Length: 454
Ligand SMILES: Nc1nc2c(ncn2[C@@H]2O[C@H](COP(=O)(O)OP(=O)(O)OP(=O)(O)O)[C@@H](O)[C@H]2O)c(=O)[nH]1
Ligand SMILES: [Mg+2]
Image 1: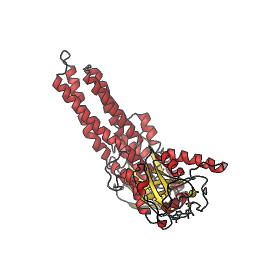
Image 2 (image 1 turned 90 degrees about the vertical axis):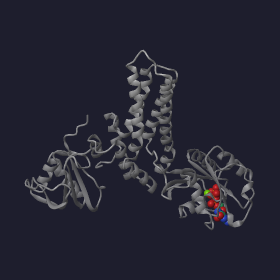
Image 3 (image 1 turned 120 degrees about the vertical axis):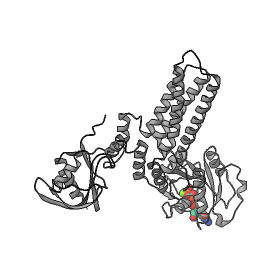
Image 4 (image 1 turned 135 degrees about the vertical axis):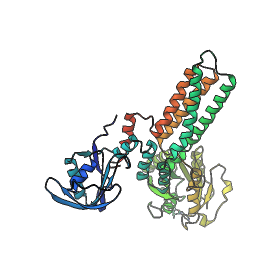
């Protein structure tokens, strides 16, 4: 098991200058270190109350800072151990010096995520909640932050609890029938168990299936603009971005290399790429650009096929459309300010066709909405709980597989012992999501992705 009986220290606020910087200590020596720092063995701080004190270096008696100090008494703290917070002035030099003093007083530097690890080890929070705190701190967009906040409040473990209870009930039922070796499960009982397992599996399935949206809301939707040269891809890219990032000219083949920029729409992160126009080119540089376009397109979650709506469809347009088939794509019919042909003449089946003008910015909002539509069902803010973490998704998938194999064994009237193997595995996988059955080695790996001081 982890070494948890020493006292750790780390800066809890970002490195660099700021109004204040918070140093956090956790472990049995925290209070003693605080007393030495404020030069008062008789200093018995009331828990959870901030007190203004001078901090000194006990070796020299030199005053280091005036700081607000706070003591959280075990087990009523973030980690469940004695915790001390020092709210100092936000000078990196000063904060480093104070941390150095605590190291001479028998604290040691915390490893990444060690505060959260202790919180989980001491039962203060579930593993999935600690991961949600990390995700909240790392969130790049409103949508990601909203999901992390929900998960931090324990929504994942709440959603899993009834599944774990139900699974346990089934396991107990099978185990008890093991004691009566001579009778097989009666047929009615077997049907009932299979139905329960099927329900359980479909609920896991439903949760796991939210991952495709959850991942996109967390990491961003990769959108690539493709089209033949001169249809206005770069103009639309600039329009979406809100400034003239890509070069626009009336010369076909202007864009040679892909350009990628991040932007947010309704709090959802988009990673948008403008590409070189798709055409057969004898120009060596342009040909490489076209190759890159195809690679970008292959890597993206959504293609925007840009078509010049003021002209009839060309052979090249058809070529581009055929590259989008079997992918998720929408069509932007650009240059609507020039008037043009009707959208119904495009025969393929995109999720939507939006008429826009990059020149006048007409229809850009509709284009933004159409980009989000396939991922949020048109409702970016009202999402239910989503699985956003690949580890959770993987464990749910394994749970589903394990339950399915037990279902099949039940159908085959295999012995209870064999059926139980899969179900016990499924129970363990669910427990690994919340950290109840996660091995130390895996816990160590997960927490090493946290920042120091968290
Ligand atoms: N009237 C009008 N012209 C537009 C519109 N969008 C783009 N254009 C013009 O069309 C020309 C080509 O625009 P770009 O944005 O460079 O086209 P592109 O698809 O990036 O072209 P390549 O980089 O060559 O593949 C430029 O002269 C733009 O000013 C529009 O909505 N209306
Ligand atoms: Mg371009």
